[in-house]
Length: 74
Image 1 (tube, rainbow, N blue to C red):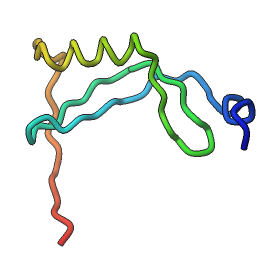
Image 2 (cartoon, helix red, strand yellow):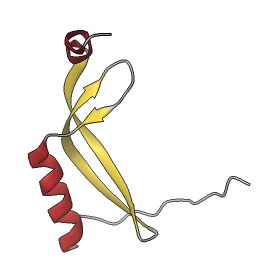
Image 3 (cartoon, rainbow, N blue to C red):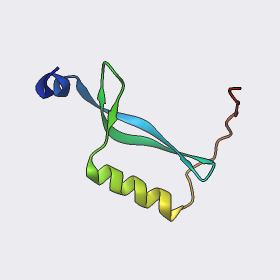
Image 4 (cartoon, rainbow, N blue to C red):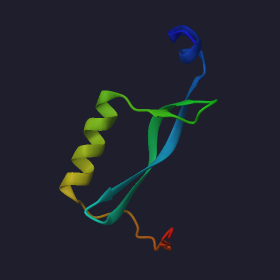
C-alpha cells in the first residue's frame, strides 16, 4: 500500500490515551488523533505528544479517578 492510500484511511477522532508509568495506569481522555479506520492505529501530532508529556510529567490533579481490575495471564 502506498503512502497516499494509507493516508486516505485516516480519520480525525478523540481517543483515550493510556500509559503505564511506574506501575500506575495513567489515562488521558479526549486526545485528538488521526486513526486508521482499518487497523485502529493512532497517530498523534507533535504538539499533542508534547502536551501529553507535559500533562503526565507535571502530575497535576486529575479530573477524576477510576478503579480498574487487574488480571494476570499465567
